[in-house]
Length: 594
Ligand code: ASN
Image 1 (cartoon, rainbow, N blue to C red):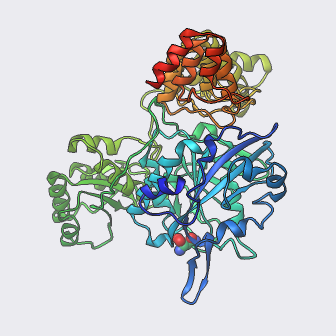
Image 2 (tube, protein in one colour):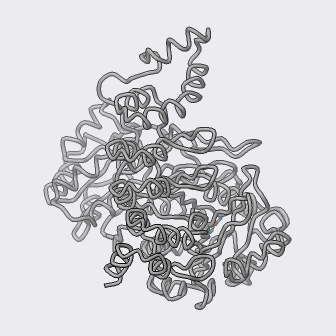
Image 3 (cartoon, helix red, strand yellow):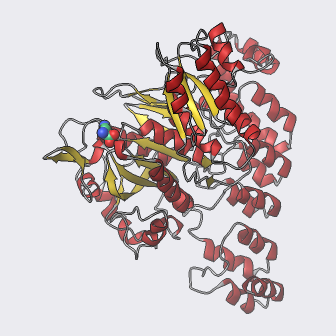
């Protein structure tokens, strides 16, 4: 089944999964004892990480990675797989491995899907971005997170493109690779793969990220800066999202969230290839610019000097730019500098804006190019597209807030507490805020107090943070059935995939309390039950049917669960309803079948 589905993504599948293998994460009975198991899909596209020496130089080798990783104890715990009957329990094939237990007490089970042919990333094109996007779409609900193995040369382009293509993303996607093949004695591939798996399997960081050399970056903020160092990437205008050193530290305030109640979708770009990068250089001629801007070009990223400057003493050149913008070519101004932003400090920068060139802020050229292609492939008028290019779509640029910013110093509540505790420095205040946000936000969600939630947000409190039981305000609001609060939390970036210490998601909470409208909203936002939550679903359904609980059954149905699941003894909910003479339940179940 998986092979067939992946084939829809464009015949890009290697040997990864056999056609008889079921979609594992939807299997009932996935959990094992007290250890939470997470499922990660690794999409191997190629790159140095899996290369071997060939007569002409390093090249990717197919059908080798999973077998080799199985021999590396930090990347595969064979004893656990055997003791827990992992392969037969979850119906897994040869390309699935399991990590040793993590410090967070999690087992990450990862399946490697190998693409065919594997590519040096220099050979990748937008067609491959669309194929990766298709696979993410097909397997999105079946895995907790995703790792994409990729060559480093064009990884920043793919990460940027995927960040735009993944609309309303709610799960962690991590691109990684290495500078030295994983098969060599000294290599960076093992650590990069391990770190990426730990992030994708254990944390909901709903972004397209790039993990390299102990750092997790926002994918559309990075650029490759070193061809020889293990520290190959830099995110010049945004600090890393997380670091994995002695401890894993996540900078939650920096994490970008979709802030939406819409479901995840991949926007297939059928990538608009009529975009390009034009780097200004001293002496560039108007003719060269004119040639570059000829039809069918629809959009270009103009790489300018410093803070967005180009010569303003060459009217012919400016005229070509102006004529192009008037013809409808979208021109985005980005700096050639590694760090910094396009601004209107200089007259030479202002002249470009007057010619219709759009300032691109502090976007990397990789992000700017893929953003242009994305926006140009969306429906809409030219004016709408020009506006969309200026918007911060996925955290790819820094937006300077208009008006006064609320700071911790403005927060009376935190200040009062700070006074009480005799603390004053910014770091200590932030620590107090972070410690207090989870219980306060959960209490506000319980009481339906939207103003309190807004106040916590204004203080910089993260409304997705978990309390000591791993419960988030969205869990609480879903139990309470307060639709307004649920909506507000989702629009503030709360994740529907948060699991509390018992493995329950907000969706399961809403089902338990039969809040049908909340269930529907969570489902619209992409919520689904995990394999752990489905372990005893058949027995639960039978019990509801036996007790004549139509409302309870409806809740499970709205959550997307098939009401024919048999209970522990093999009898179906319908049979149980008949045995207890529950006519309403029988009618309800028959209606669903009709
Ligand atoms: N040429 C390789 C690639 O991009 C470089 C690497 O992965 N380190 O596929």
